[in-house]
Length: 336
Image (cartoon, rainbow, N blue to C red; front, side, top):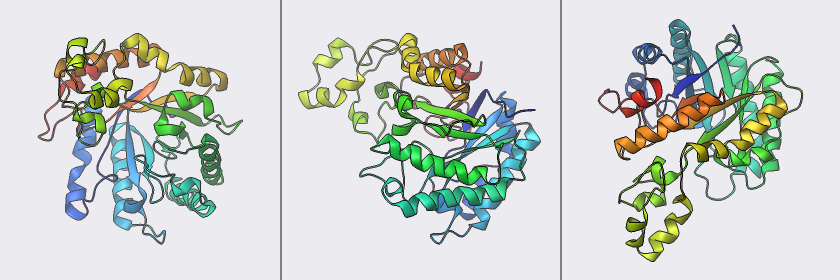
């Protein structure tokens, strides 16, 4: 069987974006979780991993983290799931970037990045190509898209030295933006690439009241479909808040979503490669009816165009399940 995926979820805050180690980290995600996800009808997991968890600053493997990754891949195989191993955050690149990440300005860091993939490839090459794929980097944020294209090529070449047929997921620049697909230059003549984008528009809906983004300061009503903040509520906002939110307060519905995906769809058609939405979702602090409506619309757009997907995330703020293990509105909206 080829590496064929349709719907999955992200195993967040386990081997990525977490300070937990030892028993706490081991308990966060287990075989039981994988069996539960397979029981929902998912066919794959996207597993984010961070450099600081997997390797020391000197580039030596952190054995426990590699053991956990191996265990997760074994559990996936056992449960009939495929897996995308996603290198999520580097010491020299994080998607909430401020200044230009050193990954794109220091040739030594480009080589280090390729070296990480060479090491991962050496460790994971025994895994079936039908069951495991590699995602080079989560949400690259290069000021010049040519820099991301150059760095990505180096990483692809590092993997191809050992694994000529492994599926490699290659995302667009600027946070895997759909619009940035016009600037993406995948290596030519490689049929084993999968192109990837993320989708979180409009953020007034998807990141409603999120504490880590500036627009999360807005605490009033939001609506979907339509204009997230209606005219009556908009007029009551102070001028500085209107300035902050204006770009995200445009009319939005399924037709807008579909138009937003024009670039990924055109590039896929021209290159005859797979297309994958590796992240999307609506935060739990959004109204449940709004959350369900957005997710159902986006799911329908992905289905219409045959785009594989993994929602963000399994049991985080956007999750299929809440912190007490109870299914959320996401399960109903995406999987029923």
